Length: 485
Image (cartoon, rainbow, N blue to C red; front, side):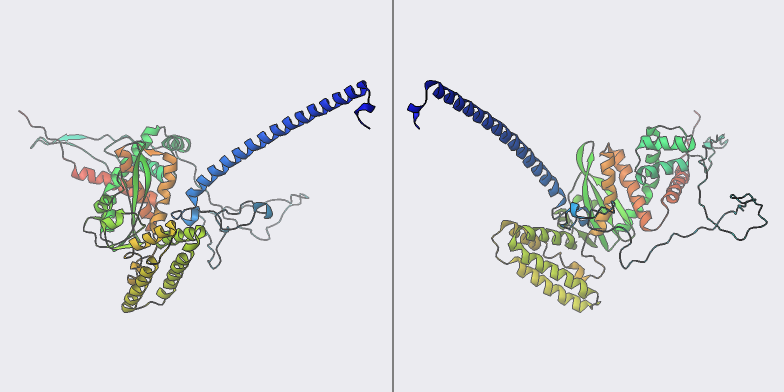
């Protein structure tokens, strides 16, 4: 059948049908184009989200990120795991006591009093009991109700010497020379701020809720500042102890001062911890705190301030191994470097457990240092691997100090652990306001950390230093002398 077989009406009808079909197809194409545009927009949004997440992930997956902040090493999908335990840790560990660790039991306190709890009749049938057939003891520990503040007026009598004209005001050990708050209030305010991490407004609320003591946030700040001034003498004693130490772990992290960049440094030994807030991150800070004549060993990371201060260093192997592992994950050429470093470190740790002699230590030090020199001399084409080898070469004299000196640790974990508390506080307080804030911050943090290391009670120690400061202030006070014309 050809076109001649159709009438004009039929051809016209067919043409209309074709035009409608074309129009339908065009509409369908428009809908598909719109759908494609929507899908493309969603893909662009997802690409932006992926880039944002990768940027945030780099903060937690780099050579300088400690293992505690890294993602779990498991590759299992969350959807494939059982949901029986909603408290599964995400840091790669498991809750509860670790294998091989002895359990710790809470020591049961001796009762201060005993109360006999009896019953006269059966709760079911009402029949009267003749006597008990046994005792089911239960120890209950409770704190006493908060006590209201005790307000004391000290009528301090004034005297004038008839011989020399000196005016004297009588003193009392419980009466402070400054302010209206006593030793307990000052100590609790400082502890609430730096141990319980409360804002000063919350500290004031706590005193009012528990004791009915009305004070403002500013008063809580001034009480904390008084505690810092009272403890500054002990802070300087801690500094002198650290200056005489044979081994000091040193590290630093950023902190804001009036919104500007500053640094909080930590200096840690086995018994003392000192914090110093400074605007500098250079070698002048350890020179100031430790003294330019410091003769001990500094355990540190690879920051350039440390070799500028001292040549007696131990570079942190935890940083080195993490950096080598990250490089090996991204660059095949770095795999033998990471493998060599890991085998050396693990081998040295096992060998040191045999308690080698000083001569054996010296021989092992030379052997391992030669091995590191051979490692950094290898030819590589990848820039990242070359950078890693350059860092190893830059610290070639400082990686193996722990081999020759038994008391030196190969990692700087002690200083990194000491910085955790200041980092948490940094997230809460945001910025230090001025020099007074820096003074209080470094002083109280140092005292609390040192007392914890030594197993001392921070509250009792704060009360001690505040009380002692009042007595010392009175002992060194110069009385006013009035002379007649």
